[in-house]
Figure 1 (tube, one colour):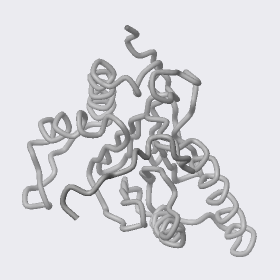
Figure 2: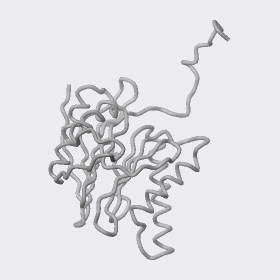
Figure 3: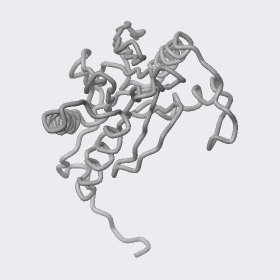
Figure 4: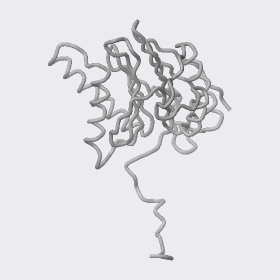
Length: 224
């Protein structure tokens, strides 16, 4: 009803909390890179400067998660259990494509009380090709060349579009980008977000999968 009095709901309890964080992923012909900051904060308080947001799941796949830290821990624990059970039953690791579909199903199974998180799945498939997948909160999956999510996503997305020639809906071929260039783009984008988003900062966790395996680096981010 127009003009209806609306009660202030600010003091109501919520099962969710936004802990910030920004993640960026890029995949190429033979690699996938995901970078995320390590700051965990609530409003203007920093609870941790060393919160890992990228998790190696097996020898060919990793998952990044930003958002509510409690849901991140619950989701990653559940996924590790699913992957371990699969390995015990089938005597081999789940492929990155199967992990991506499993993540989608897990998110969808919680659609009535969804995880308050943003997910990227990256890895190397059986042909040695880089794969990157993004999701909405209820598990809709998309195969991507690059993506960003988290509190600084709206700041990072234009930088990625600019770096890759504003490619939309695969109407233009994805440009060949070397692994080192992709790492530099992720690092520069996260640094730029840090300058403008108070929920992103402290350090950059940069993880890479290639046919040669998994590698992880960490870099300090500018502090203000």
